[in-house]
Length: 120
Image (cartoon, rainbow, N blue to C red; front, top):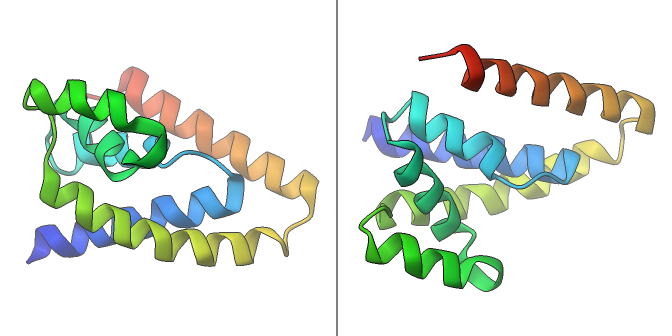
């Protein structure tokens, strides 16, 4: 049950950030799947593509799926939570001035980059 709650939180955060900054969910979901759920980079990327499957990732999904790098349950939960988060993130984004939004986005990208570069 804790796993499902964590997946919902990750999906909502990814959706909010996607709605807020227009980013793909992978920048949030992939690090979360690696650092919170202990997935390998391949598993995290495959699972991320699975929940963003149609229409953009069908061919990539098929490659990751054939190699066994997709967790279907995680992808389904993340997809539902991502839609909800995307709605609320977009509502918030339209209230933030462009300059502030750019700065928030830049800080977020830098922090994620440092974590992936220097983290375990």
